[in-house]
Amino acid sequence: MGKSFTEAFSSGECLVIGEVAMAHDGSLGLAHAFIDAIARTGADAVKFQTHLADAEGTSSEPFRVSFSPQDPTRRDYWIRTAFTEEQWAGLARHAADKGLHFLSSPFSPEAAALLRRVGVSAWKIPSGETGNIPLLEELLADGLPILVSTGMSPMGEIDGAVRQVKAGGGPVAVMQCTSAYPCPPEKVGLNMIPVFRERYGCPVGLSDHSGTIFPGLAAVTLGIQVLEVHVTLSREMFGPDVVASVTTGELATLVEGIRWIERMRAAPVDKDLAAEGMAPLRRVFTKSLVASRPIQSGTILDRSMIALKKPGTGIPGSKLPDVIGRRVKTGLERDDFILEENLE
Image (tube, rainbow, N blue to C red; front, side):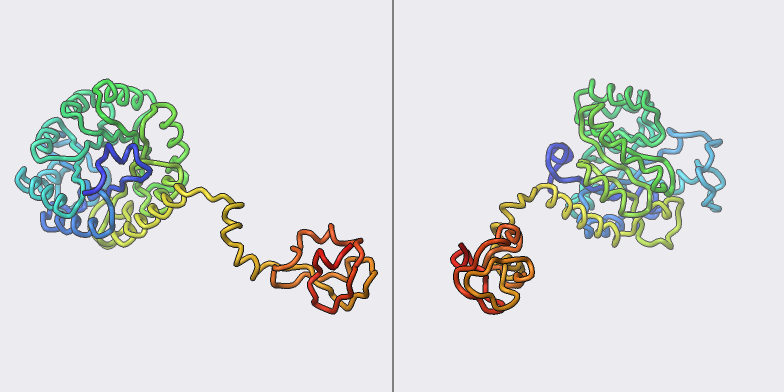
């Protein structure tokens, strides 16, 4: 399964979460297919959402967007798309078999209790629950890492959530998030990543809803420890989050790009040392000072008598000003190297 969340918080690698959320639309087979597809991308974790209708909302809960003509109410949608505890346990086992961390965001203490029995690697606080003190208390009970989403929260609410989680003693990461589906570039909020890091002194991450790989790549250059992106198997799938999701093919490209960025950031280049190592190439590709025409012994060199030509095995072109005005001791033919032993 690779590194744990706690290890990722202190390592130089970003832990990548493929967020299925409710994209399975209640199909257990599709949920399992998502696990297989996300495992093939090289991501570290798969995440779902666990909604228990009776514990979470009332019959008057509105849809965020109108998308499901088969469900008269949001509560009906939660009931239709819910899995049993046994089915959640099967998903968790499947994820582990594929080397993925298993997560699911709980939207009630009852959902958290169910997921604790099933087994999760960390807790992700949904954006709408950041100020839910009883839920946070429930999640603090087992000391698992907690990812705090900030999508809908003002700074004061985030301060309170982070303070509560830190007081509980467990690892915490604060995730920059903007609850817009899809999220445009102007609202991604990369500027908050260093702000959260300095303000809370803890690992930071990005929960991205842009539907592209670009914010994730940019955030990794800022040193985030966790990245979460919504995933779809196809842009033609049903569901409200498809427009805010990357395909599994794009997720694979994103993971590859992240690992490239990490290797680049971990390997600073010393230009002087690099040039030393490229000495053979420099001799081939750089140029030396040569005679542009026949030059008699005793001639004082001026610029018109000197050309720069390959290979770079003689006096380098950067030394041209040091050579102009010096006297030639031995005659030179066109394209002869101008060497120190030729000059007074």
